Length: 334
Length: 186
Image 1 (cartoon, rainbow over the protein chains, first blue to last red):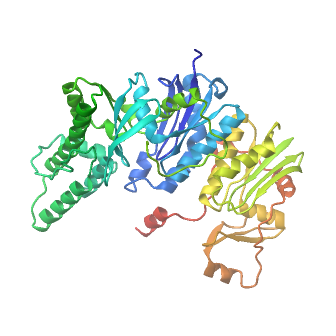
Image 2: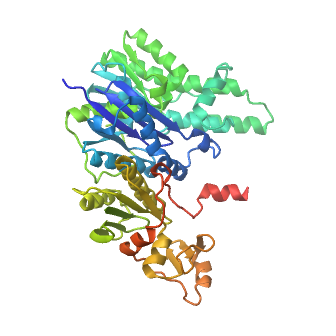
Image 3: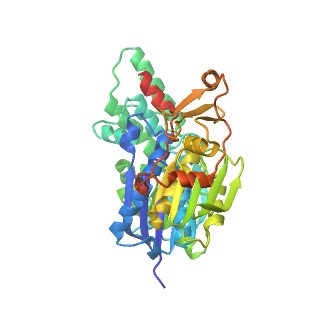
């Protein structure tokens, strides 16, 4: 079969990224221009600034990717772009940019769901073995999904309130850890012990998650201790929070592996960069004799390579978009 | 010489194709706020089977998203086709098309204002005025408020303007956003 090269574009939040991916699994070249330093000054992503920076930088990001690949847009087979979920203004820059490339070079346009992109980050330098269990953990999502085949998803459970990444960010804010909060908590937790007794999120037999109770408990705890003039053991609290939040994920993954008999688990989404989480899921996978796939660190956070990987099955099905493609701010996997 | 003119700075989409400075095709869609669905299809209608030689884009001010989409498309066309790109502001478009020195338009929250000399050169800076402030500025009705596009006049006017480097083309926003205002007050 002829090799398929997809040029993929990702601008859903604060990274401008373009990649060329071969056959959905081999990254020929990738550029990720992050705006993190700019947004850190404001304590979080400012949507209007993110959109502005995408417009300013996107043609330069393309040039950089093409130079790395020693290719022209004419050499690829399709143009793929993230169209949901994300910041509307940011998504739209990538979408209009993709339409122009598709038109000028006469290549099909493929629209990709960013969340499914995170799942397909596991197809890079790896083979997805179906059926598999996918744990999606990010700032907006916490979901456990069975994937029977390419683009064939069945939802097992999801968060009833906050996503795990959101809980990390909010706890970071309470502990005055600068943006981005997730990596900050992880670092701080390494210096602490899980000495705080925190409530377990959802001790039931569903596959659902809940993080707002844990978050509220920590807000109240910090508030009350501060009022009493007691010192908060920041590192211990970060460590306790992380242990409680991740143990909940691990317990539900364990339950799902046992109940379904599935032997391949993948982790997807920005929080999959968390080393404690990676270690815990690794342990559960080993206990269940399951194969574990976690993307390389560079493909855990937002990047265009995962969009190129997720576009490949759509290319094979000729599932193409037209030039009326619009952005959508919210989306689910299934 | 085929020139594409793109104006998506507010609610309307205006796409014009000029041949040697004369209008040969025009696509105009009124009041499409959610214009991502319509902008590029309108452009394709105008430039399909044409070899483009130049792009002119209205780079603001106006609706942040509208301006950004027009500029993103224009700079990507210019970069991929390796053709010249020129920018013009919406207030220059008014000054040239209406042949007026005082021009302004409303984005429903306030007015973008520009004052030009006889050579259509901006005097001072563009400003964004609240309805009340603008009402005072315009108490003698000296401002031209109708947004018209005369693409042929704009083409003539831009003949002497140097093209820009596609990578460096960016929108003109004028109006401050929340975080900029917060920073000032700190």
